[in-house]
Length: 153
Image 1 (cartoon, rainbow, N blue to C red):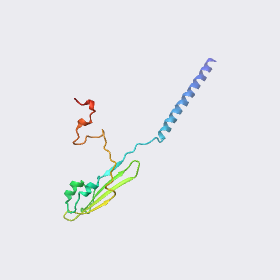
Image 2 (tube, helix red, strand yellow):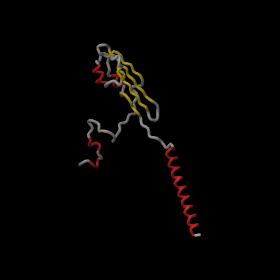
Image 3 (tube, rainbow, N blue to C red):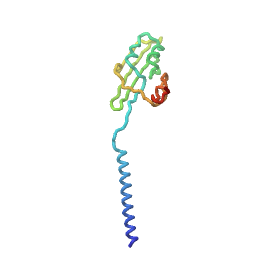
Image 4 (spheres, one colour):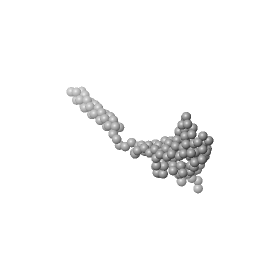
């Protein structure tokens, strides 16, 4: 009789343990599928093009001068070296997509003859620098990254 009592207690404990484990697994699975909020980032792609850059361009500039002001173009037409396209696209994490495009056309001597713009180049872009991540930026004093109390007095 003692063994039967003991066996039924073990079975009851085993059932409770099984229920607790099942409930824990179910809660873990459900919580993984719930939407609490996912971190998203803005994704900038291409050449950053601003109105300030475009306003520096003048007809008659050489391709080298344009490269100095604008940088190398994202797209150079493979069969038409007289056209350069500077494309910038910002895929906003919680918004739409902003796209800017500047197409520059050169004459056969390599002089700028036409500037076409698409998108609002004067609008401020919400680009934020990453702080503390990635390689150091050239020209930045590494001592600025240290906490103030870590600097020698």
